[in-house]
Image (tube, rainbow, N blue to C red; front, side):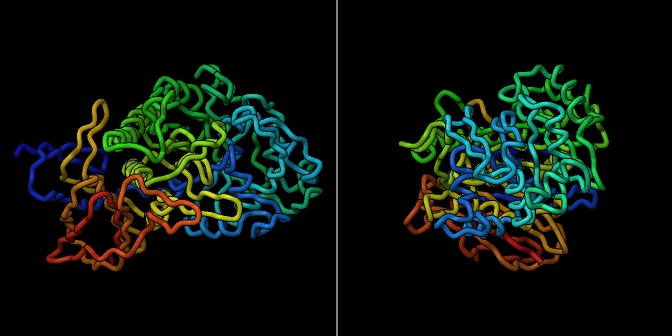
Amino acid sequence: MNKCLKSLAAMAFTAVAASAAPAESAVKLEPAADAPVISKEIYGQFAEHLGRCIYGGLWVGPESGIANTQGYRTDVLEALRELHIPVLRWPGGCFADEYHWMDGIGPREKRPMMVNSNWGGTVEDNSFGTNEFFNLCELLGCEPYLSGNVGSGTVEELAKWVEYITAENGPMADLRRSNGREKPWKLKYLGVGNESWGCGGNFTAEFYANVYRRYQTYCREFDGNKLYKIASGANAGDLHWTDVLMRDAMHHFAGLSLHYYSVDDWSSKGSATVFDTSDYYRTLGLCLEMNKLVTDHSAIMDRYDPERRVGLMVDEWGTWWEVEPGTNPGHLFQQNTMRDAMVAALTLNIFHRHAARVRMANIAQIANVLQAMVLTDGPEMVLTPTYYVFRMYVPHQDGRLVPLSVTTETQSVAGRPDVPQIDATCSVKDGVYTLSLTNTSLTDASSVSVDLAGIKAKVAGGEILTAKSVNDYNDFGQAEKVAPRKFDGAKISKGRLVVDMPAMSIVTLELK
């Protein structure tokens, strides 16, 4: 049997010829003292004024009959707190470059309305604005990530927004106080524009680099607040954009964004719930393209920034299907199946392997839009399979990466990376090792042998996420079809961990 070991950042896959014998895979931990820390911000979220993400998803208002905390849905708040969300990006997305922040402050009943021309022509009443967003971040205990309006806004407008939020004194601070907030908030992450190559202005890379330099100049740091400025980066594989921004503006930003969705054909994205085996593996192949994108953009960044001062911020990623039948096409409401959970796990594993450069990622989106954490319908809420992946991966946040290699069978996908049957990631924090394994096969279980590299540990706990069908999802008024349960299929003997993984499953183990 011919085996070819290929290095892939801190991980490697070995392609093994398929056979009728039960599938076996091997993982070897390769601890390294200089391995990077997996930034908790990789587990960031994204909330745009789009469909029912904000209104009905996060915010119902203090007078709503739906149980709420200061206007925020109590059930959603409680669910999101379990994810230990590190950072939340707002107000867009494409909406950000048509958003004028002054419309979203002051008495809610007096705020002007606007048409959300990007997303379904919905009338936006601006009842959720700056104060509501920053108060939400405080309730969640996360960092705010503000996406500033460069496409249709002015330099002065963005500068005054930063001042309104962070200044102790002055006219903008007085305006904030008149709106009920005495002390300034802290603002760390500031995005200067969004998708400036497209809906954020249709700029060329060269023109945007100069526009970025101008706008960021006037975003001042007030009263000890330190801004981590993020430039609007490339669309998927546009390496030219990254090259120009690094060349012409690198010294003026701390982060550069990247957007990629696991979409094969934008004119026919396919159903979220009705798909076959071929569709499933093609989607996983698409999601694995993220590894090449991050590798290629990182290589350009390394040329200009060998010390890796600048972070790569993948602040939009995930699946994007056709909307659910009968819903507004512009509201991007889609269901979320076990297939989406697989995409989440594989993508997070990629970010772990590139932790030396990837400092933040923000899945799209937090509620009721695209690959959401939660779905709501009136007073009802359901947690999605993707939510559960994020919850199972919480222990990896700010853990030190434990590099590893994997030997496993692979599934070929035309024109896309081969899909490994077993994917894996490991981290250590406070002496506790967290190992996450994914079996992508729809049909074959796998016995995974893990070489612990001399680590003395016991299995202290484990969870598994799986389903009867990869098309399964959680819906309103029904028992959950896809939810984690206790996993007891792992044991350690003579320095080796053996994990018996069912087909189509994600397992996280705690070793200490």
